[in-house]
Image (cartoon, rainbow, N blue to C red; front, side, top):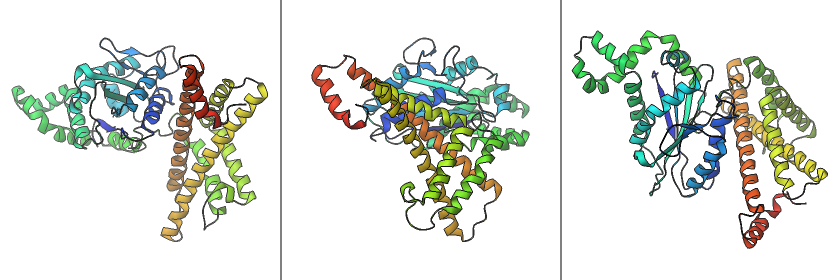
Length: 411
């Protein structure tokens, strides 16, 4: 396991949902549990959109709207993440928000260089997550003057970035390691490339338990979302354990054949699924907050059409119902996976660790889906407010209204 982990992905610029997903990702890294907030703000986003000092944005939406606009022009939005073990982060002095800002500013040019982005065209935003077990930083960077769409980045690029970050971050350690082996100082630069693998092996032997722990905790980070959250800071191990019996009890009561859909379930099973969803919202505060956030955003949007309290409350209940349906679908997807595993392996025995794995993965997927829905509804409100507020011509407003009139917001 490397002393420094670097991962990089990007959504295909030509996919229809890419602009909205890139917008949602900025909101995710800026506000999710574990994100270290800027002083006096409700988010932790910082970066550089123009030459000068690193700045902390007054709102994360400021950068997210720029990212969304460029995404519509097929500009690649590269998502990177740099992670250390807690011990290594402390050794490097990465103990507060300012230290992480300085670290990212020092090393962002490495990410740009290996992705073919010129310094004068580079823009980036980042957020530091101080999660238990693997403090890390998310960065989104792009070429503001990109002319050609890049649908694929070879896996060797992130690996080269990781190796260069190691050489730059641990230059003194590598030098001391060389000197300990009586290598001449003038050979350091040339030898550093070949020494990275040997140095990492040396560090792993030196702190085996540290790297085992980092490997286990960092394993929660998915390749698709680059940090789509372990449950650290959202739900304790005891809290997670409360949901395991309910999930597996539901699995046993599901139809073993046919399509697994909410509307096709027996009424008594529907009632148990509804109760399970209710317990998720009650016992996991973050899930409950996300449902309320989505419902609030739906209310705000509906008030642009009709501020009557009865209409607004109707939209709130619709929002809660939509969020509950999303959660129900995620639960049924997880149960479908478990039933398929049962069929593949005959009488499948679920060890406690495997039960916890399925339950944790389910809750993570619910969190990601709710976060993205809440952000998407906020985007819809911004667009609608702009359309209704006078930035568009009368004809453009009429066209916008006709396109959106069937969304269920109008009276």
